[in-house]
Length: 177
Image (cartoon, rainbow, N blue to C red; front, side):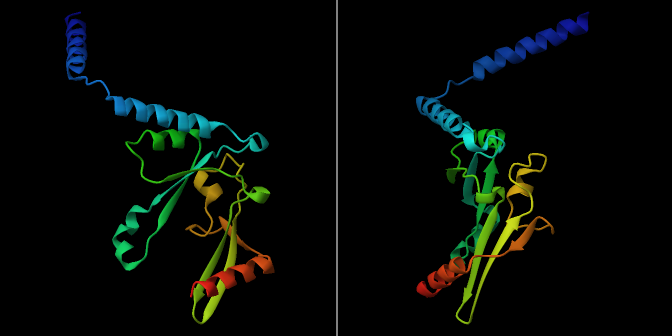
């Protein structure tokens, strides 16, 4: 019985100490949290045409491992595809640094990416498509959304690209040279 009294006393002391150290949030912090809550609520509204898809947003930020190469003109970004839980975690960070974009359901239901590689002597245009439909919630967000950055084999496949699209990308590459 004495042990229980000691536990109760230490818990009471901890609560008193926490109350003494409590600082109410500043007006700026309250406003910021309110704004983040509104953003989450707005983004968490599922697309009525694609209610079976749990992806609601994409957070685009500088890739941390690439910051050293920024001086050489090489900069990478990371794309974080978010469900409601992941978006909440990002918005709960103190001042997340990046771009938050509403998720747009991909045509055909699979993530795909067209990549154009250009040198003065060679142009390559390739389209890769993820092998998992974005609505396959049994698979992780990464497995459903990765395209050209896939490390594991079998997550993406090369698919045909329309010739008009290929021509437009080649024209663009020629234009920027």
